[in-house]
Amino acid sequence: MRDSKSPSRTPNTHVGRYPRALRFSEPARHGILLGPTREYRALSAWCRNMLPVQGTRLARITRILVTNSHQHSRSGLPGGTVRVVLDQSRPLLPHLYVTDQGPRDTIRPQYPQLNPRESASGLAVLNRLALSWTPSWTWDGNRIQQTTVEVVLDLS
Image (cartoon, rainbow, N blue to C red; front, side):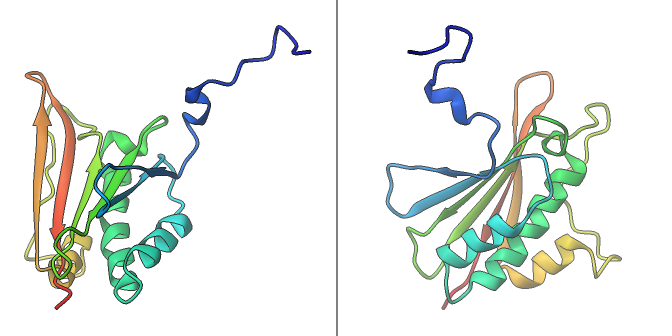
């Protein structure tokens, strides 16, 4: 017999539990949803599982982008999330997508951009490790809702 005061189990019982695997209908797409905390062990393990031969490089790239998301976006605030998706439909050129919840400062938003004077910055390291990377964002007419960085890896 169930206590009437205890919450019933619904599909939303996993809300707030991170990291969480993301499921896609396409077999070549895999993802993980991270919370606002900077706990990267599960992320590193996920990267090594996705690309066993290049897992360390993928983990380094992903950690750079997730760290930037936690530092510069609303994803690092309580309740924030960072979505990481790896699309392996092009086996030698997998695409990584890291999506955060947009800039914290809506008056003067900062976009991911490479500063040539900072050769040790995360984006400078990303620039050396990836074939290419491109930031984009979704706009709702009032503010940036999400920022996504697409990274193309060369596995040839």
